[in-house]
Image (cartoon, rainbow, N blue to C red; front, side):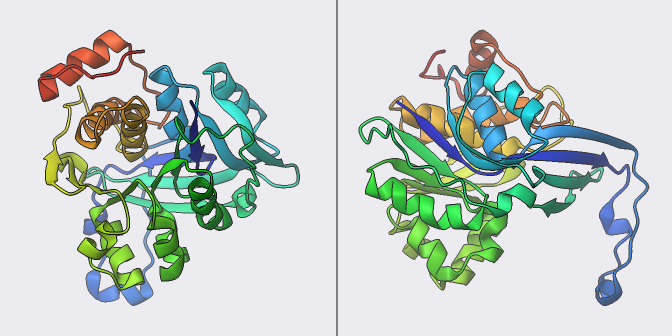
Length: 314
């Protein structure tokens, strides 16, 4: 039983701005935009979608296998992931490149501006799935190398592996045909509301038409929870965090809980509720791999939010 987590590995430079972007951006001057923000804090953290998703899965007792590329400065990060029981068998090291990096600025309203340098992520992982088990395995294709985002969905389908497609920030770089091919036959398409509209525009398909190509669509809505459309439309709320320090990575943690539930036979709504509880822990910390929880603490928070047991143990 494997969880294949395809996505980026990156270092996040996270900056905080104690003001509102809206107060500094003039709508009628966007054609000559030139703004600067006085930053109140700066930290560098381990990140990238694959690293983030795998990290929270490891907190839940899983041993995911990352499919990604990394660079010459990855050794310390890689050792950290391996110490959590995460397999790097699918990580290709590009010795002449740096690991990808992302610079984020978050304002007091939790709005974000970010820039991403792909570096090693410009190369595909080239993993061949020597141990695939169609009866038990799950995968996720999250934002990463564009070739991987096109090839891996086909490989998952060929090998009978159920997978989530989560194109995220790479939607503008993928053609409508690329997106349609990857979505078709996936078990779930997971995006936020804005990203789903971008996919509809790129593919020239309605939400209903996209829904017909996949096992279900989950649309995340931030602090409003998520909406599930998998034949019956329903919503999933949130689990209340103790505090909100940084929203970065909450979506990745949501996907971790979602995968955990699906891997162990829970239905999509129950799995999404696990994801919501996972996300609540991530946003309590600055950084995407800083949160920790025990099963007992997780179960108590999950019961308080959803009036049910998590349905899986670790």
